[in-house]
Length: 384
Image 1 (cartoon, rainbow, N blue to C red):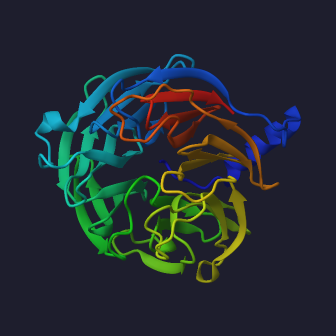
Image 2 (tube, rainbow, N blue to C red):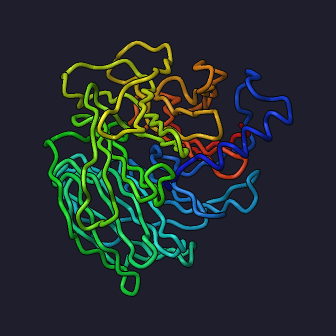
């Protein structure tokens, strides 16, 4: 998703909440609508562009497109099934996880498809100008793809991917044909990304503090790395923090301070230990001297199946999609939990996720939140 500096948006939302007398008022998000996307499997990552949403049907290797024109009645309008395009996996492998990103104009959707065999699959470029009939226009083989991010520098367009085989790959995107051409590869440590809770990429096209584009990369082995993206074909690392493995992240930057909120990584952490599900708050004002300044606790013990899958922010509130706790709402200023929401189910029998609810991703869009569930196959629309 989708990544951006939250500084201006945060100020506007916080001001409106103060006016309404709602800052700090403990309350859980309220359900506005629920849409069943899959009746047999679970869902994964969500991406939104305007009134169009895309969600990964992670157990089926399908991308569903949803019309959000009426938030109270979201509806599926089209699907892309990778298997119908001939497939790119062997009979012994199965679809798993992956990520999505829209181009700036919303015409293209980049689908980083992953399978249970990390050496297979790759990047699918879809033309979604007609959401009812999405078409694949390009395919780039690349093993174990997990994360994808898009960046437009004003003249050229770029796609950044993270996977368990190649590492960090920057590709030039050619919109006239829909093709991508890799121009930079940073291998990073091997076997550092796996499921949706093991890596993240944020690109800020104009960091207010640095006054240039920055890229923030997290993995379970490397923690956080900050890159100068002035030349996307040759990113320059400015600094890193590696005390613990990290996953999905959000970046909030002003002209005085840069804070990174990152979910703790559950499996590929370099310490080889399962870590407590929490949000790590890092001060990255000086990328060469990154330090932890706070920890937001979910109050959940370490376990193989309890993990923070995805996060997003609106103002001073951080929303964490947790595999067992559902959606957990934090007040980042007071560093406390404000509320929770759980999809009541029921679980789809064929879903790979072990039990319901199993919140995987949360995406803020306008005044609503979209939460995907890896067990029920449903998206829930919430009012914060």
